[in-house]
Amino acid sequence: MPYEFTAEGLALQEEVKKFMDEYIYPNEEEYYRQYHAGADHSYPPILDDLKAEARKRGLWNLFLPHLREGDPGTKLSNLDYAPISEQLGKVPFSSEVLNCAAPDTGNMEILNLYATDRIRQEWLKPLLNGDIRSAFAMTEPAVASSDATNISLQITRDGDEYVLNGRKWFTSGIMADRCKVMIVMGKTDPTAARHRQQSMIAVPKDTPGVTVERSLTVFGNEDRGGHGQVLFENARVTADHLLGEEGGGFAISQARLGPGRIHHCMRTIGVAERALKYMVERALQREAFGSVLAQKGVIQNWIAESRIEIDMAREYVLRCAHLMDTIGNREAATEISGIKVAIPNMALRVIDRAIQVHGAMGVTQDTHLPLMWVHARTLRFADGPDEVHKMTIARREIKKYDPNFRMIAG
Image (cartoon, rainbow, N blue to C red; front, side):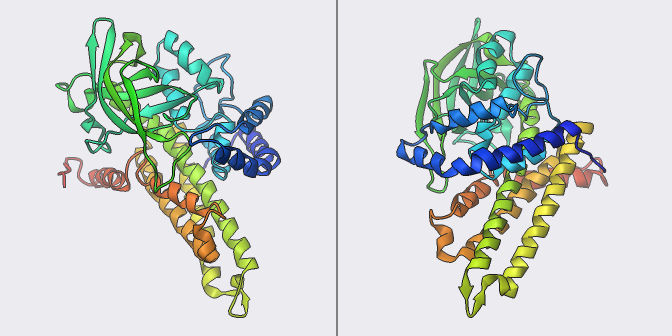
């Protein structure tokens, strides 16, 4: 299916590339110096300078196609934003500089579409302005949360309030000082139909009864912003914090994950591109057994395979973005699941080759490759594990031939 970027999209793609070259790459070392000089989850001051420049250039909230009149940012389709997301993926903090970082992106989308006017004013506005950060609380330690119908946190109506009780973990971003609000998914009616039991609700981080118990490391690394474990003990918010209607949480979660998966996948393609760059540069510099590594047949094979796999992956994601824009997220569900499986696995292969070319140096802090690998490997769980997406794809494929087919668990 053919697709075409708009003139505005192409112009912004070039502006983002220029911004990366002029501001992000030259300040990358300074960002990490400032971050490591502070405590875990600290906020490097250089981010404020970079954000001011990005906003001045109109490179702000580019991910949100449903911006309302007067909101800061530029409306772009999923297709037009996808190559921008790829560029931002090459440097982990660059998405935040353009106010396009997860989990804020998905949270802003939900607040924009489903929050009451008061809650949008209180929480969406400062998020759109980049004044605060947010967190998303869905996964739970006690259940297999890849099936969202398993979640057990209780959201109980009590007069004009909702009361939350339960425990979440991998609440991304909750450890950051600038995180002020989270979106929480829980059960409002355990007796309803399986996909109508869940609801989503906005919960300020400082709500009495909310306790951030600990930050979870990822392969031993402490991600900035963290993946916190959060306890809710009779935490109360007013009823207007509910997002959408009671029982609409599962549907909202699926709508949220569609664009989020596009963003994750395109950022990951950017990571793979940078890993390939490192691989080639190292192969041209390092000598072994009488010649540079770039002369070795096996290294040339790795470089060629990486180039092919990255380009194939990019086309897959762009096609998916085009389908989301033209026929909708629901109709593009197979492709959305497909890219979520294909792209992290592709990136892991490319990064692994780059590590191998670097030798022992490739597993040290002297390159970005170890953290690249960690983040790509983590994506095979985030937004649903590979196995769940493959099951979904297989089910849809089988039903093309047998519409009455019913999947049996196991």
